[in-house]
Every structure is written in C-alpha cells, then in structure tokens.
Image 1 (cartoon, rainbow, N blue to C red):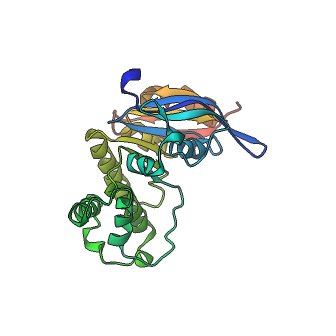
Image 2: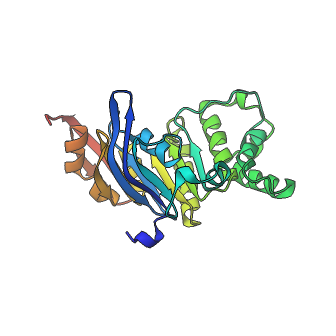
Length: 259
C-alpha cells in the first residue's frame, strides 16, 4: 500500500469506554477507490473503529488523519463534506418524505437548488427509490428505509462512505444491488468502508478485508487471505470451508472448535 495515496488512516488508535478497552493500538490506512470490509466477531471493535474514522468517537490514544491532517482538527463542515456515515441502527425522528430525507445529505454543501435537486434525484435513482420520493419515511419497510438512509449519504457525494452493517435490513436482491452501487461509487474514486458480518458477502464484494478481534487487527489483506479458513478458525472459533469460484464463494461452516 502506497503511503502517498492513503487519505484516511487510523494511527495507533486506542479507545477506552468505561472499563472496556474496545480498540487496542489499531493502525490501518484506507484507499480511495476501494471497498474495504471490516469483519470480526461480536464485540471485536468494528463499530467503534468506524465511529472513530468518522470522528464520532475521540480515541483515548492515537489519531485519525484525512490527507495527513488530524481529522478532529478539521471544521465540522469540512468533515461532513468529506465523510458520509451510516450508523448501524439509524432513526428518523420525523415523518418526512424520502426526498426530504435524502436532501439532508446536501446540508454541508448548500450549492443551490438545481445542483442539490440533481444530487438527490441521482441518489434516489441509484438505490431504486425514484418512485418513493414523495412517500413518507414512516410508511416504508425496513429495507426501504435502509435504502432511503443510504440515499441521504449518497446525496452528499462524500469522498468517503462509512457504513455500519448497511445490509442488515435488506433482502438478498437489494443486498446485491446496494453492494453493486457501492462498488460503482468506489470505481468513481470514493473510498468505501463497510462493517459486515456476512463473511461470504465480504469475500465476494470487497477488495480488502480488515479482521478485528478483541480490539486488535489480526488480519488485513485481500479477502482470500484475510478470510482464509485458518483465520476463521482462529478468530470465530468454527471450522469452515470455502466453496465455489472467486466472486461467487459460499462458506460452509461446521461445528465450533476450542481456541
């Protein structure tokens, strides 16, 4: 990985929440134009790392940098323009339309009604929500709401998309469609970092996988390396075997093993 093109980086992050050390010396650089999946068992620190990368958690030690500058030192508007963040369990407090919700992603910009409307329309179309623009968010299914919330992120046209379990409420068809759209974003130069529990989706759709366990990075590289059968056995404590061809792998998992 070339240091010259790494624009978002965690540098020796330690995060203490109460008595729990949820991140322990995590260092990783993330590349624009690439989909990176963060994987690991429950409690590994995945969501905490993503929140630190979005400047929502201040690390106890270490720092996050954007283009070499401390992210925490950037003005809030500059951070909001650069980074679009989708939390694991987002809430919509008001009964607003899908179009209005997506339009909230334009707040850091306020470039003018025509450009804002075009960005919102493009985001809704990308997520197959064009026909839902006037619908109230309160009337949507869980999967539709998840896509509407991601449309808000896309409407902001950030340089980085950080999404925590964005596929959890989606059926298989919309999971694949959303992953395809995120890959399109990456091809356009956007850096995409996703927390994923589904290892097969990470294997088949990410260019790189970072595996966390107990707040530390234990594997980092191409999916076939970071999610090897030996890594899965060591980190998740299950015997597993990958089946199928690259890009269409399925994971066959057996019983648990002693670690």
